[in-house]
Length: 263
Image (cartoon, one colour):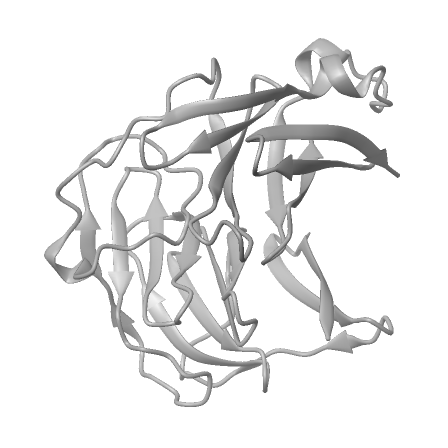
């Protein structure tokens, strides 16, 4: 089971490093006829089943990897630098967005074994002229027809929204959306109505946090969220914080509980 991903800069290029639970490195093989990433990697995402992995970044390449062989089975070319990616639960769609608010979708139906030639994806949402920082895997029934309707607006954050994730269980299969922001909060949403259900202020509830010699007021932005399928646990990464904050969602009460700081 592969549990750790490291991204670092070497010779001005980003490199993906995978390590198994025993700490042994796993080496990636480019099998789609293209090249490895040549610039900073900005987005990574696993498919829910764990069989596919996607990486993308400033080189305008979206690379799809099989986690069974750790080979690149497809390279998709983007017109702009990619900022975020998502994979549908069934693996039929790979979606990615860029700094100009354009969302593209590829519908090859990857099974983790077949290798595809380099290609371009079809646009699904365009011309918003705003950076899309995070995508979640809720797709239209016919993504090639585009996304013509806005289901809801989730309004409440006072700074940029940096990350999104779903919390789903067998009792609540539709789940709820959690979001992190530069305003130092994690918020819980009903995505169908856009209703704000609960807010967790990281600085207020976590107490004095141990930042690396930087003023707390300017460095408590939430940078990433991670959830586990069929679990109510949310791991929260905060800028300059030496550790991870854990929250738990009470889906019946529709509240966020915690937080707990893990160093």
